[in-house]
Length: 229
Length: 255
Image (cartoon, rainbow over all chains, first blue to last red):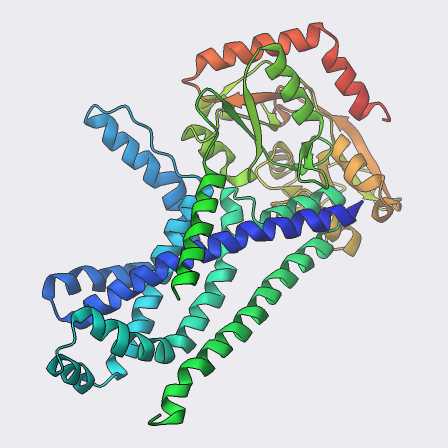
């Protein structure tokens, strides 16, 4: 009988992965915008990005998640009500967690990418400009390939922490692997079995990620290792 | 790189679609599916148990389109206040403190509260006899309120889950545990781990102490008086038809 419970819990792992990938996508977008914004030297952009990274890195993910899930919709709705709109905004647990994790890890990504950008010699950009490269071409052909190589170790860390942080979503009622493991543990009275199963799932994701990202890093390291092709 | 980005977008979209709440007109009822035999999940992830069966019966009788979902215990009452859920059914004890913040249906059950301990270890459950002993309870429950008030000389250990106290009981980290009698029997005494344990002390209900409340009811938002009325009509019908008796027999006849 508990054999089926294993399957049910592992199926919920798919929800955890969806949340992790969606949050990663949002955090990479925010991270790139943030890093380029900080490097750009435009004052008003910096005035947005700097408080953002401070705020996002300074609030525990659980606290922010609870705020986004319970308080932000209530605040928005009372705001709408006061201007006479009877429109009810509601976040599902998935959306609340996606917003929270994307927001927080976007800040970590900003710092990771910004650091990588500072290492790339400015002369390369100037040289590209002299050759008449467009902004787009400079970013795609000069910055991005080097950025990927330089940011990959930091990116790997962020991703691994992000995957584990998705477990918090169970506290909002998202039917992810932790939530299902808890349900199965209480139903069968075997908490160790199902929490170990969940632990094994996260460990497997970590191992696969490390292997995949290692391959990517080798691919991008070719540029420096091979010298002039 | 584009492929990965596209895949992620597709994943995100799938997640969004899968997580949106039920269509309007549907009533969302939350339950904490970690409390067998009242509410738990079966091997396919489906909600099962006494409260779940009862809720479906009530919805059928009242012609309501109901969606019973599993939610975490801690977020239930805030979720009800913020209209995330329309109602809660989770063996919620009706007390004056709770009545101040939410509305309740008519009482549908009078649960019995009981202590459980190792066979022969505890014979007397009076506050004097349990002085210095470790009492385990689930936090935020009527049992918690009861032992906190009446057992000041004991050490009270609070747990957020229904099954964690049994682990501490069998490991010797707690001397005695108080819960719903039916939950103790179903989740512990009937299982291998519980074979050296027994129910001790008197069977307690709301008549013995106000902390145990008036019984259990379905919680709803105070503003939603129309739903309270409908649920009560459904409950009355389920009671009159004998469905409630049948449910009681199905789940608790062995006691």
